[in-house]
Length: 617
Image (cartoon, rainbow, N blue to C red; front, side, top):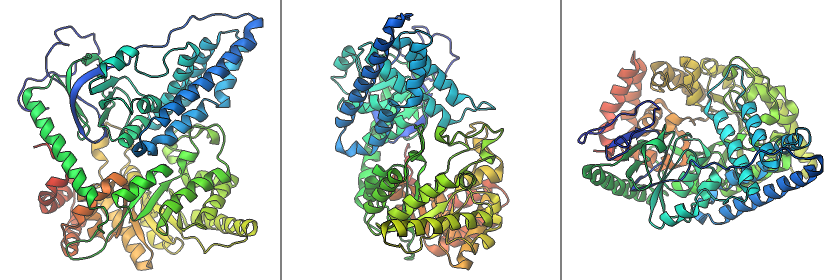
């Protein structure tokens, strides 16, 4: 809550009175989806639903209705392609999201359901699409036990988005989210409020004078957030009941750094936000202008900074941000949002595009980490009581060797274009590494026979993200060619804290002494075995945490590309001796609070100007 003007708190979901909707300053909290600060008028665009008459059809109308669905799908795809075509060049990284929607409009699972409802139940096309949407939504959400996992929720939203586009096409509604009246009001730059925005809707607004987005649902990893970051538009997502508190024309401040939305801001709020917006822009310009500088401590030691990528098109931005290599390329995106498995050629083309984009620099491809909180319908995984501890990652890969071998062959083929490493997720035993290495050797031989050129042996690494791997790191180091510490899952498994739980979020700290000791064990084991060790979890992208990792002995940090400039600057402000001393103090600490105090008091003051969130004074 901010100082100064009176605040209103968020009441329960009762209807708001006109007085409540009047001029009282209200601060809403959500999730920071895309960095930046915006000040402007609100435009509430969502709330209208596609309407149609539920009609039972005659047998003679069945083929006509099916033809209407096919035609509507074609026109919906055309609308998405037009939106993609209208996106500025700087936002092309988000195109794969729209391409996934194009594929979903052809999804046999969707069309089979629609056809069954038309043929068997004699329902009109619109009614059939609506019911198919509801069926698929329930199918995605029907885990046992029920889960509130953000990834599943996002897939449900994808189904809703695609079916909504199909319905709009069927009733000849506008193919864009904005009505003509909305578009008229967007003659001036405005802040768009909506319950949700599909990537297609977001892309369709790329040419509009949109200052920021605020949505009631979504997460930082939702497609809407990805699109907003690609468009470099500030956004706050997951703001509960946001559209109930704001009316079109209200003055609003949106902070994509802290995830706050201020409705009816005071003059002081506006002045403060404008100053913050200018500081953020200046900071970004300064840090990105220095992207070619290599990361070195004051005392001259090199630290290699790499990018975590999810989509091939993110490579260009990663290079712009100063990524030297790719420390983690998540291959799961090829397996989700589809009913079938990706072919070897499809995977090869995706991996090769990343390898070629980085020239001779190392690209670390992680084999698919499906299962747990990452769902892919093409695998038809059985429901589990605790998916995070079930058939996921390397366990799933080894349980389905044909699928795994196809991916390995695609990776080996991509390695002919550059320097590739392959990384195995959720390793806990040496048997898993040995089994994967045997399949990799077979894949290398297959590719050599098929393409007439044997590549050099590809390094095979292990992610250290379960406590067993850290404890056994000295043994695993004899079998793996490199380590990469995945701190997100390591925190979850070591501290027994569900990484998606908001209630327990305060316990999921990478600064826990237990986590630091596990990391130190893995680092020491890697150094003793003379194999590289990196960190590719979220911990690496936080400047203070990154410095602590360097003090522990890590010389490669891999992170979201946008964090690289800040971490590089932070590293340049400390000496290695100092960091090593702080790391030793932290390893001796008994509580997370003592660790935080040791790091913050020693290094925090000199990094204040780099902290976008704290840049609020």
